[in-house]
View (cartoon, rainbow, N blue to C red):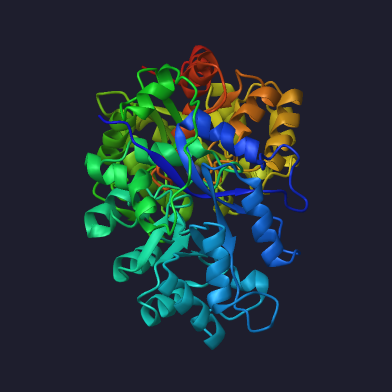
Length: 537
Ligand SMILES: [Zn+2]
């Protein structure tokens, strides 16, 4: 397979007020990511420049960047007299070889659908500059539709199109041939392939949000894309190059030698090392969504098909229906069926609705699920209505501790430590897995402190923030034996979550621990402690 030439369409450098001191933010941080991920070029905008004069901030950004990084200037209408307009603006952009611009109408307090905006956009279209538009935070989907319809000559780039709003995003990109889209937040399960099949493959742009987000996470979505070579090359960089007013003057030299895990990913091959996904959901056979969330091919066959593509060997699966609605038993149907399948690649977690059921009934329900399937853990959820240290949960935790089931915890009180302290203290033999540990540095700090206090706590990483450098931070803080790989697929596509670990700045031996060895050791220990819980095959 020919090597892809990657050009990142959305990166951002600079500090913001109140940011965590360990969050990567500098040009050097960005270049480090590019070297590890073999990305030759990037478009760069700057955060934290909001209070400055915009023209001065734009020129400062240009001065900051080496020739393989291209500045994404921020523009505003000039009617108020504080920013150039018309030919003067185009001349400035030309002189600084600015390849594209972005707009931040909410931040800068102007109306993107007004007359002054229209004049700005018409000038940019005439001059050949594409306009990057952060969706939602700066321009609503309704406004964006209006702009794309009213100004068909403008080449619009929708930024931050979110996987959580696939129906709106698909509507935008598939209805407007003058709209391109960056992918840094589009962690939609098989969403990339769907949009390509619908004809948008020439308008999708690889992008990462690095260095505050992992460039490797974004890259893995394209590394493992189920698309022909020409389309993959276009998404990796060709589409962006075709869109820009000016090409960068150089390319980054000095890529790092890929380790064996990175080499597999870069070749689009399934990882040859063992991989265990500690956090997966599962839909009923044939289902493509879970109500508000699109999850294409989110059933057992779909999960296995994707697992084979990227190299996931085993998956711990939990219900979607049973955590989002009242149907406890129906939610367990695909969990039980998958965990009984002869290939042995799934194990299940049980979700028992606590409500006001008696302790006897809860345990009966749990034992009934365990009798039918290979159930190794409990998965409560905030939607069930009670914090996990509530007395209504106590019988379940006692049972789990006695019989070697682990607890997979998405906190009821989002990362306030008390719930974990209560569980880990009262049930010292219960293995507690904290989900979404990689969400933010602030959450990681909480989990790191807890891991130091409680040897029965583990950190499972998954989150679509794919926070830059945080896998390394968790390893440093929790210890290399306490960090677990998980994906939350098919709600999130698993490829970004896997790429986050694959491209982390860690030795191969530690990557292997996160990807599988820690999970295997944890499950083996539980199986050895219990007659009720079977060993993983
Ligand atoms: Zn989940």
